[in-house]
Length: 122
Image (cartoon, rainbow, N blue to C red):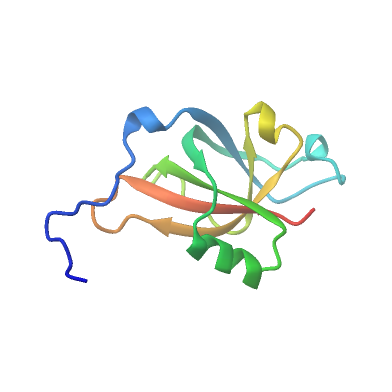
């Protein structure tokens, strides 16, 4: 099967970033997401979608039961997500879930976006 030189992969655009997310550090006082005492690190909008096959393999290796992938605009020096952070997705479908950052993939070609895999073990 020949490779099509005119193929361009789909790109995230600013209009796709519609869901508000908040990043916190991992400190917590209780088992409920609402009991989190971690400091707020960063807030932004994100594109939220189901994990890809690559993401599912990472989740399987980390024994993560459910996951979601988000894309955020690269905040450059303002904030760098790490696997020590937790994320709250402000959407009714993810209301009681506190996500942990599982994998961070910066876009090294043009430095516009960062893809982040989030996982929840419960």
